[in-house]
Length: 332
Image 1 (tube, rainbow, N blue to C red):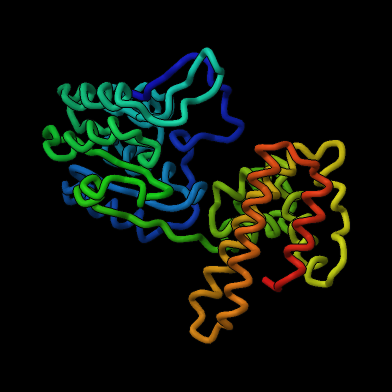
Image 2: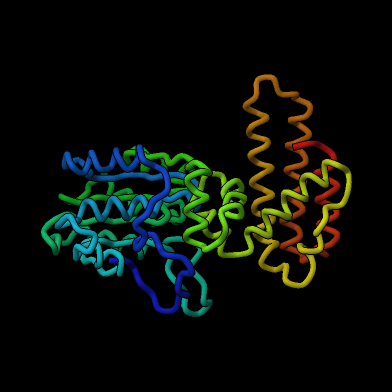
């Protein structure tokens, strides 16, 4: 069952183990269903994609399909998985630290040892045993080596599902022992109605959020329930104003009272937009190489400034002005 600790705050959104709806990823769902029907969903699987794209939701759908003892959504295995109480499912996550009231920064070897012990048991409900690692790129080295041993010699009728936003961080030997599913961005037209319905906002606002979310339905939903819409609108205005050589309207929303929730979302979206612009330019065979070099330089300067702002508690008003000047120097 899931590794539970006392203390973590309750999630504000429906967690993946309880969520029935998955936006996009029809090909991946079809591939998994085919493997399960063929009795070939064994050993290791690696599901990759950026945060908020639906890795965990897809994985729990696969677990429910694999362990389903009937065909109804209220099947006992479904309820047990949703409650984190299924005896044949172990979910490895970063442990909660009571002393600091925070999650650990990595998944430790102790967690993987518990997972290994769980997989070694006879299935309590007569089917399969499943280990799900959310996420595997948070494993420390000792934990990764312990996991590798399980992947090399998996117990009978067991499945390991690894989730990774940055699979390059995994040991090559772990990647080579897993069948891989790379999740692709969903369509904005799929995400917007989902966000409007789940967050209780109008469709136009949901569409703005969907465009900023980069095809990640879960990320879009997190934006919708936080200060995401405000951050998205500030960012759009920031880019258009910077390109026009003027100070963005509403920039006070990044420095004034009530900006603490907006600022981290704004900076995250800013870094993402700059990175995507650089990638698009680099992939264009006809791109101006000098302009590409300028874009990379601006992106690096912006990231460095944001890091120093966080580390040194710089005056945010001055940081916002510097960001505007940097973006004005080259059009993204």
